Each structure stands twice: as structure tokens, then as C-alpha cells.
Image 1 (tube, rainbow, N blue to C red):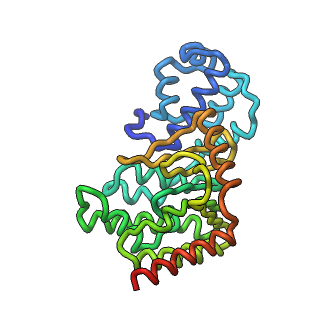
Image 2: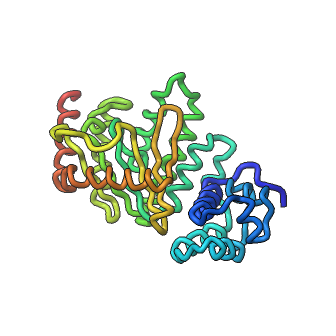
Image 3: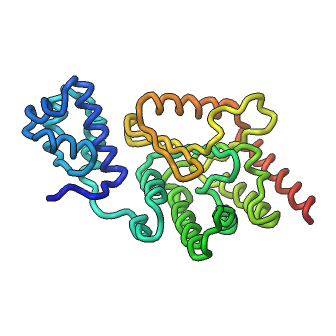
Length: 287
């Protein structure tokens, strides 16, 4: 079978974990290849996600590398045996890879934590608010592209609204006050945010202006938990797309960031009260 031209994020992550397994054992690619019956080119392609391996080959590699982390090995075996395409593949011809990989990460996460500073998290946006967020892009997008992106974002939300994946959303007060699409869109969004916060599996916590120091980065963050901690992933939104981090040091750093946010954010009840008060301000000011 020829190498994959465009391995998915999960396929690349499998390769990354196999590389880390090899490096922890102190092997070079050639040495591992000799031990498991692969040539150096195959090892390189495996670690880049361009070729797949069997579960039996995974166990052979783990044994050769003296890896006895059974939960990790079982989780990697789960990636190998995944079949079928995710719903996001239907958008591959119309959206960039960044969009698809965000949906892929979310769909395989066991839990999600987000932190946003300038808008309501995408997983909790109303259709009108999401459309307004995409409308602000410069240079302006064609209407059909805005509609596609909005539909994609709304479909992503089924993951948390169904209760399948727990969501913790930390939202800075600034994001509650930033307008996209006008006061009516914002007021409706804040109303929907309160309703979402009352659903099982969705926690909304506000970080108020009164907090002395904002914990964490100014960018919007998502921490996606995997079936084992080694397979957690950090997503960072940047101006021209998204960045993903999975190095152990990055994961440890962002676990600490979210722990700080958890200790500094308002309680769920106090957060709802603040959201309601902001909504009332918006309605009174622009009535």
C-alpha cells in the first residue's frame, strides 16, 4: 500500500507517540527497524503517520522499546483499529484542514476545557453570533463561505449538547461584552449561554475584570483530554489558524494554566448572575 498523502491528525499523533516510545528506549530509527523487522524508511514513514501498522506490530514495537505502559498501548491500539470517516470529512473540499482537525480533536476527546478572552467559545455560540464572528474576517468572506463555516460550527456543538463530551468553559468578562452582529445578537447569545450552563455536562465559569491577574495566555485555548493523559492535546487559536501542542512539557504547562483558572473564576451560579447582569446592561443601553 502506498504511503498516505495526507495523514489525519490522529494518524500523525500515533506516529508521534511511537517516536517518543523509541526515543525513550534510546534507539535510533535504524536500530528499532532491525529489532522489529522494518527498514529505516518504513520507521520514518510510520512515525510521520504516512503508513499504518497493525496492532501486532504495535505490541512488537512496545516490547522492543521496553514500554510497559499498558493503558497507553491500549489507547494507541484503539487509534489503529478506528474505522470509518468522521462527519467532518464531508467538508474536506470546502474548508481548510484547520477546521477539520479541530472537529477531529473534539470528537475523540473524553473531556474538553476551553478559555476564551474575546468571544464566546465556538462550542457555545448561537448561529447568529457565529455568523457575525465569521463576517468580521478581513478581507471579507463570500456569504456562502460564512454560511458553510457557521453550519460546520453548529454541527460541532452536537458533541457537547448531546452530553457525550463534558465541557468546561472559562470565559473572560471581556468576551461577554464584545459585540458581534449588534446588541440583539449579543443579548440572545448571553441568554443561550445561561441556558447551556444549566445543562448536564456543561460548566460555564466567568473570569471577571476584578481578578488581579488574568491566568494564562491571551489567546483562546482548548485542552482536549484523551483516553490517557499522554494523548491529551492543547489547541491554541492564532490569527491565521490553529496550533496543536502535545509535548509532555506543553501539556503539563496548560494543565497548570487551567488549574489556575479554576481557582480564580467565579462559581457557576455567580457566573450566571454576571452573565444575566451583562445581558441586562446590553438591553438597557441599546433599547
